[in-house]
Amino acid sequence: MADLDECAAAAREAAAPLLAAKQARWGSRLVPRLLRLRPPLTRDVVVQRDIRVPMPDGTVLLADRWAPRKGGDALPTALIRTPYGRRGPMAAMSAPPLAERGFQVVVQSTRGTFGSGGDFDPFRHEREDGLATLDWLVKQPWCGDSIVLTGGSYLGYVQWAVADELPPQVKAMIPVVTESALTLDFLREDAFSPRHDPLPGLDPATDRRHLRRTRVTHR
Image (cartoon, rainbow, N blue to C red; front, top):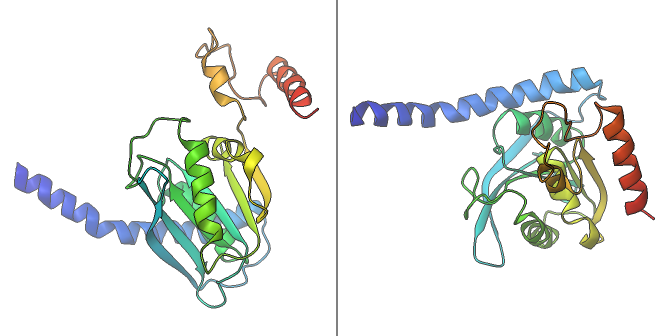
């Protein structure tokens, strides 16, 4: 049985690069078509895997960097921090379309996920780790003067976690389908009730509550 498990693990490891390449092609072709993006500037993109990003407490988080093969250095950098994997469908939907259209893309696995060190404790470390990642990123010789943070759901929350202390190189944040105080919804008595929508956009009452909270936050 152990031999079968080892064989299966070896087969998965061997197939991983092929699967990642297939997902990247899917992200390169299908997603831009669905989003009606402009044609790519290049399809010759390279990926630097498993870049080690040190955190102040000694934990090392792993990241992949996507960039055009030629002229990739100093392009604007899109930073995506995710607990869902650097090489799965979510990364394939984001990294190739951006890297083919004038961006470098850094996809980082958050603490305790997909090879990154430490334990995954949702929401708890995202501010410290996010700020440390940005501090590391702006010091890289290939990083240009413009950084954008992007992603939805948990990938959007990690942006809000650092929003009040961004370095000047960060020119934009694009948090989608998320909240800055996502954990507060989980503390509600009816948080997991079918009648409660934890994110705005589906229920009018929730939308009104979210808009009031947003107006108060930005006064």
